Image (cartoon, rainbow, N blue to C red; front, side):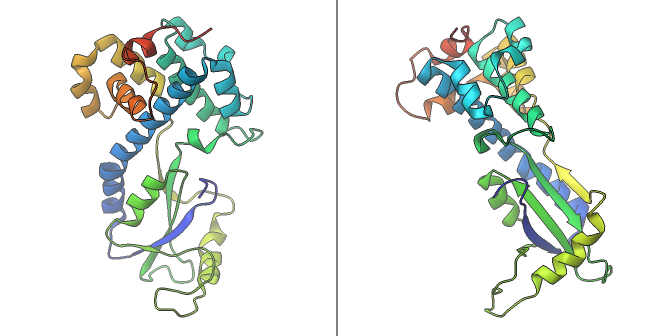
Length: 246
């Protein structure tokens, strides 16, 4: 389900929103970090497989991000992993532009939960939630949280087999938010390049410290690259830290 077409849920009002947001941070942040690592590993893997960064970046961004848009990594030894990390950061910035073409879903790390009540029943028993992300693992984790109940935007049979009027309820819930955004919790904009540079400068011995701070490490990306299939060179870490193919 695209980020721009979020899924509907509801929470009983007895579940406090601060509790929900704390759980999102506690459970969701490590999962999101894992998705960042997997995304960076996948981009590096494609560049290694093709030997053509321009083709990979152009294909994933539909021609909207090229190596000319990646000056910071070029100043930091121009390593393949730093270049791919900056590509992900820049691609995410492109997503925010109104005129941007949709990028490959494989690059989309956005995630947002929006919380609303029913204006016709503000003291009612439910808080309504729209949860949007391309990442199925994050959807699954949110849906499994205590107190979260699926409440799709479309009408259809409920869990007891009866007809529901969910679309009518959602129409009321969403009506006030035509001009402004409801209370929300969002994943941060990726800063993968800075994490990679820090990991490169501090070395593998700092992995535990950096991981404890929720940062991406080169070692984690190397491990994820190896899981993507055969053909990875024995000196994969050194290959990722070497200059990107010309």
